[in-house]
Image 1: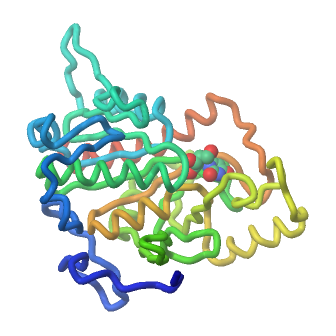
Image 2: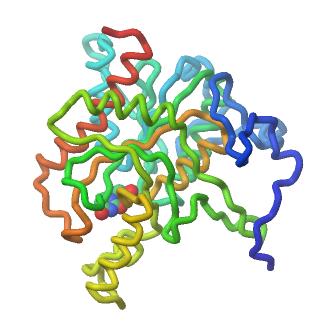
Length: 323
Ligand code: R2B
Ligand code: URA
């Protein structure tokens, strides 16, 4: 089996605008699927979301969606949905309540609050990949336009005070490579993980208005593991020394990596491939140059995660002209 990079077959090369380096320019407009097979399906079952383009009227349910906010934990995304109800001044009538639209699947949660979807993605690239495929198809079937995607998450920071907000301008893998490698038909395909610079800067400007914490832009390293993959000494296994760990973390820090988490590469690569504007905004919950263990209190963690939610909510309100 070949492990070299392979060119996409012609039919997948949708005519998105690209710059000289091959970077697809993210753009507004309808969601385009780079898959000619979808329209041949008699029914498209979005299995992990418990939705289908035949059994559900997806344009009626989701046609007005403009912002999709992803986050790891189902509880956190439920909380974010309730937070957005307040932020968007949505009036939930007596006897009505927000409900998890994907409750029949038990894999992910999906809440809709006006034009905002709040979706959980679980932990790691495989889990992120599944929900991203299905959410993108959902947006396509629903004929959504001008959609922006956000990942709100937690991460380990490098030389940053815990609670700092990091906005990712490029996601890299554990070897500092700026693409996600996917084994496809026995070949390794490389999908570049670029993000939209304008969106990064707008979010940073919003975050920087609150001077009680720092909001910074930089590279995010995405790993396939929380422990050895992130140079932790406190997993069940470890074959390296304290010095090895620190030398690695300092080396990646010198190359511009500000934080480490587990989904950015997939999220950025899939959004880039779809030419959809997207951003990754994570709080740091530990300084990895100081510690491996996460020992902040529950209240502290909630407070730090709330910072990302508030920045994204302010962005959404601004773009919906809500004062
Ligand atoms: C951040 O936190 C999780 C691991 O604790 C993982 O999903 C990530 O990216
Ligand atoms: N999430 C990660 O993946 N790593 C950390 O160190 C903290 C949160």
